[in-house]
View 1 (cartoon, rainbow, N blue to C red):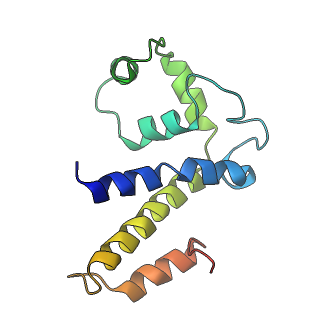
View 2: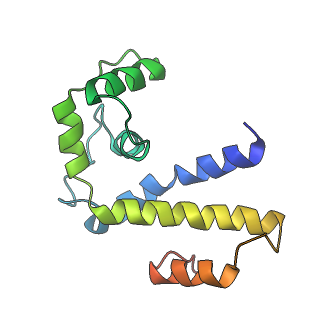
Length: 135
């Protein structure tokens, strides 16, 4: 994996921490959801949801937790479903927009005139969702 992709993915993982700073926007029960340390914490629930599971939930959960190598038991399907229900749709919309913003920042930093991309369209989209960083 090249360095710029690692930097991008590392920065993308920071969105979960930003979401915890505004729980009223992203969680069904602010102050209660994703406050305790659990096997299915926010980052894992987001990752499992975003990767669009391709097999049954049970198989995917087993593969995911085996791949972690942490020795933790995989949670039940019901636990994942309940954890996903704690997230509001806005979490995923803003998560993807955050990814777009990061990608555009890294792309435009490397190439000021990328083929097929119009910076004004991206800026309008980011403003629409209040995702432009304030300077």
